[in-house]
Image 1 (cartoon, one colour):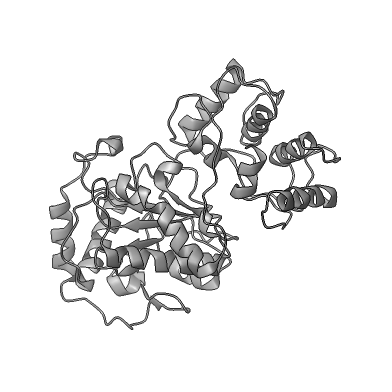
Image 2 (cartoon, rainbow, N blue to C red; image 1 turned 120 degrees about the vertical axis):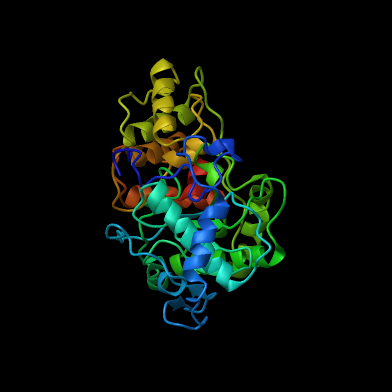
Length: 380
């Protein structure tokens, strides 16, 4: 990817939010009807249309049962849903910022899914539900955007979504029904979330540390302070099932006046995403402007400081056959650590061998490709 993807109607400041007034972090969303009105219509529409749990449209595939769009009564997308040629790099967890319903029935989960889809299509102008999957208060797992369950069963492709600006082609979005700013999800709901994340990781070959919260990428309080605080436990619980180190990547803070290899890496990544700056290792006014422009485009906090959101949006997996300034960033880091390779932007055998050596030295899987964990160790 050589260009920043611009904001569009298919990008979300938050994926499901029928109650704007109660959540000022979503103040850029249009005025919306109350959640009671949304759910009232959905319940009236679907009260007699609840299908058996084992009906067509359920996805099993050695994982948790997922109620497909046909089962919960989804509308057709307004335009064809795009199936991407590759799988995701990560999972992003959200909350819907709606009332914490005490109706845990499957019928309620279906009605809720319809209300979310109606809001996303009618109020936000999206082609379909924004997220790939939803975990209801009653611990029912539902397909969000059409074709997401089939793509998950395939395990090599994903559906383009609308849940997180800058991440809609590389991340699976999961909405957790409710508001988790001051309370935690129900135990059964959390358990279903663990099961779904575990299944997604197995199907797509993801690691537990590749599970994030919405606020790791965009300026939002989502998924709520309490659910966000549970993410280390979520990663640990998923890792207990699939193996591996669940610790999330940690990023440095870089600001105007900083210099050195970290600043050069930041500059290379900004150039890869379309910035017109020279990677000279000096974080000056032009680099700060580029950071602010990038943050604004990705709907991250705009402060000109490269922190968690900026790094998470900038970095991308690289491996054999890749090219460009993102490869130069990795190569320059490796050279600074004593590896004798050319900084030519071409990821060939020498770069792969150097990266594998670096990974072994850091106790990482020595696969010769840079994911978020390897990138975070390169810039540590």
